[in-house]
Amino acid sequence: TIKVLVAEHAGFCGGVKRAVTMAMEAAGPGVYSFGDLVHNDLVNSALADRGVQSLGTESVTDSRIIIRSHGIHRKQREQFIADHNTIVDCVCPKVSKIYDIVAAHYTQGYQIIIFGDADHPEVQSINSYADDQGIIIGGDMDVSRVVLQKSILVSQTTNIEEKFEILANLLKKILNDDILVYNTICSATRLRQLATAELAKQVDVMLVLGGKKSSNTRKLYDIASKYCDTVYLLESIDDFKFNIKNFVKIGITAGASTPSSVIEEAVSRMEKFDNNEMMEAIENSFKRI
Ligand code: F3S
Image 1 (cartoon, helix red, strand yellow):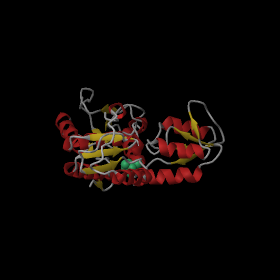
Image 2 (cartoon, protein in one colour; image 1 turned 45 degrees about the horizontal axis):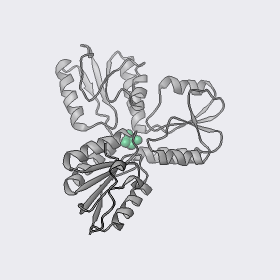
Image 3 (cartoon, helix red, strand yellow; image 1 turned 90 degrees about the horizontal axis):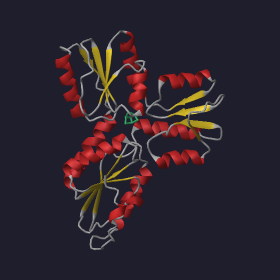
Image 4 (tube, protein in one colour; image 1 turned 60 degrees about the vertical axis):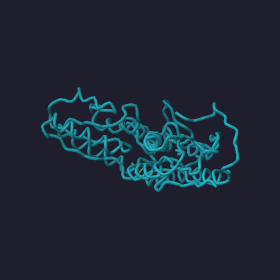
């Protein structure tokens, strides 16, 4: 028989739970959400069902605006307030803390170095507290724009710890130790990543559940792939359409914005499969990256 194991710390983290609860409470007609609340379509469509409209570039006044968990540009927030809107601030407190660190040091003349993905809204929002002047360093560890000056290093909350350490050490050398290192990687991410690695070592196949736009889900996929040969990234278990006859142990993990209902559904579906039962392999429906 098939054994289904769920990683510890899979799914919603504290910040996302808080954001979803706040947003659901605020939801209703005349309420807007700026960008997706979290990187999960199921959550976002639940909000839409309650009447929340998605706000694009148009401006609104005298409305309530839900601000997503991974933050928005400081100027955008200020504009909303200037337009007499009320903010439903769903930004994770751990992200707001990075804003405080960056803002405080930027005003004191520090060079702000951010380890993260330059295209990610969280990183852009962090950089906005340094007037967009921060140096963003991505996975390629390109430090060529760093200048000799007192500096601080912060990280996107979802980064991988080991890579952050490597960059911190590299920068310490370049800057002759004139750098304050703030490891702002969220422990929820760390624990989820460790648990994913542990589980991936023990199973034949890993299913990583999460939104395709979710960077932390993609990182879980990368980590699982290090330890397990067969890993699939699925938005929900409905996307799972392949032959599992060779798998005895199935591991399941999920990104920070994946609702527990998605995990539960995946577990119950997997448990229903019999190991000897041949499912039709539908190669093209593989959600493998
Ligand atoms: Fe916040 Fe960490 Fe979640 S930064 S949104 S608690 S992954």
